[in-house]
Image (cartoon, rainbow, N blue to C red; front, top):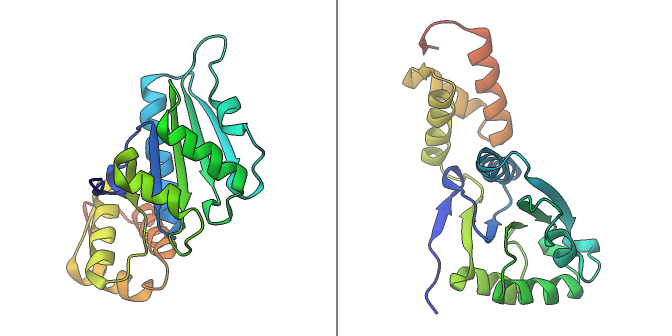
Length: 194
C-alpha cells in the first residue's frame, strides 16, 4: 500500500478523512480552522461537530455524519485519538473503508503513542490525508514560521528583529505567534526592525 505524503499544516484542506498528526496544539488549531474556513466558504450552512474519541459511544460518528433535512455539509472534528475507545476504533475503521457522503472527518493524534496504530496506518497508507502538526524543533523551522506570520499580517521584519523574537520565544510556538501578533498591532509601517 502506498504511503500518503504528509501535507504541511499551512496547506491543510478538506477531504473525506484528514489526520492531523503531531502534538503542536497551535498548528492543530490552525489546520482545523483552515479546513473549517474552506468548507464554510463553500457552504455557509456547514455543521460542525466535536467528538472526543476518549469518551466515544458506539455509533456517534455515523449519527453525527448522517444527512440533515437540508443536506448541509458536516465537519466532524475528532480529538483525543491517543485515548480512543475500542468503539471509536471499530467505527473509524469502518468509516475508513466507506467514508461518509457530505462529511469531512478531521482526527487529531499526537503521534506519541501506538494506540490506534491500525487506524493511523490505514490513513497513512492512502485512505486519507495526513497533515504534519509536529513540533517545530529546529531554528530554521521557527524562523520560517515567524516569517510566515509576518507575511500573513502583511508586514515584514528585519532579520535581526525576527532572530530576536525567535530566540526569545523559542520554547513555545504559541508564545512566538502571540508576540508577533502583538508587535504587528503595536507598530506601524511595512517593516519591523529591532
